Image 1 (cartoon, helix red, strand yellow):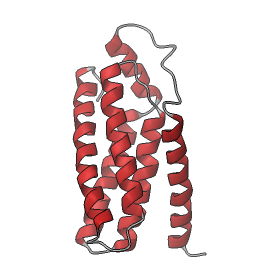
Image 2 (cartoon, helix red, strand yellow):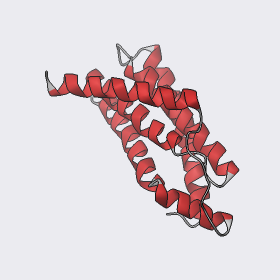
Image 3 (cartoon, one colour):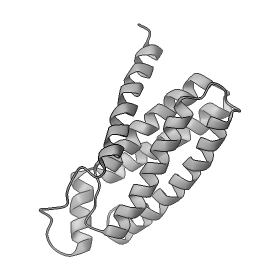
Image 4 (cartoon, one colour):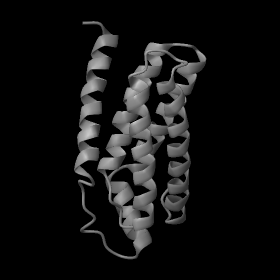
Length: 157
């Protein structure tokens, strides 16, 4: 089996896992944190390596854009499947100790998982799946950027 085929198979399984996480809703709790809300958010972010995961999500978005510019459909769909996996991981780490942050991250991750899933099924670069996915990715990225600013305000960098 070629490397490309194994990646697609792995991403398909990951997309299924991410979909299951979304269907189940928030799967982790916020018990066991102490101190102020800022401190609790910091503990949560450290426990779930949130900054690292979100950087991976943004790398996926960048890879999608680069693949589009290079006109490489297989790379676009593979990178979109990776986005599903990585945004699904972030979603699976919710809720946070901060309800506003949870809502912002939840919206971002849902948009990115949905867009990645739509884009991963694309059969052409100019089709509705890709153009619609790009709009949803932009919305998800904006929400993720707002959440990142909120994390920074809580002292998480």
